[in-house]
Image 1 (cartoon, rainbow, N blue to C red):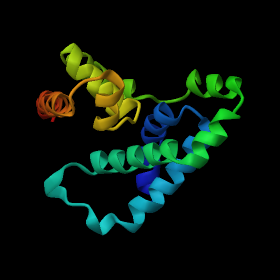
Image 2 (cartoon, rainbow, N blue to C red):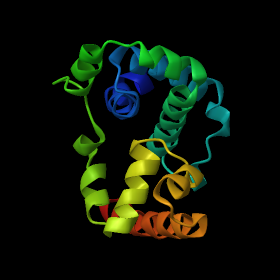
Image 3 (tube, helix red, strand yellow):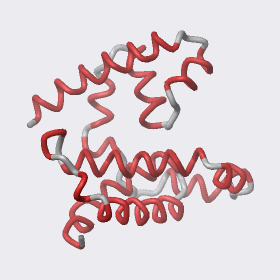
Image 4 (cartoon, rainbow, N blue to C red):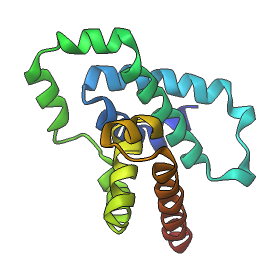
Length: 159
């Protein structure tokens, strides 16, 4: 576990911090995610993808679950704005841009990029995107699916 933590925690922390924007919350989420990773390690299937990708998904889902929770939303309303700004602009925070994800997303069509940004970097569901932007849910799903296909080809090219 310590080897996994040493290898992946800086990048995973950056991804979680990008979602929650508060350093202390990101630290708690990362700890919870690593416990979940350790406890469900037997469920990891190498045929479905890389270990790092599996770990990113667990961390990302943990972060999204946290920001959607009522407790977080109520606590966040009373959070000092300067603390949010410090977390967001922290010089040593590793963000997804550092592993090339942002550059790959920037290569998508504007419609695909918007959906991916809202889903993966802001944590919105496809239904929430459809409702907020007055787009049919099927259109959002199609854009997300086609974006994933494009991104998949980028990842295959890097492997």
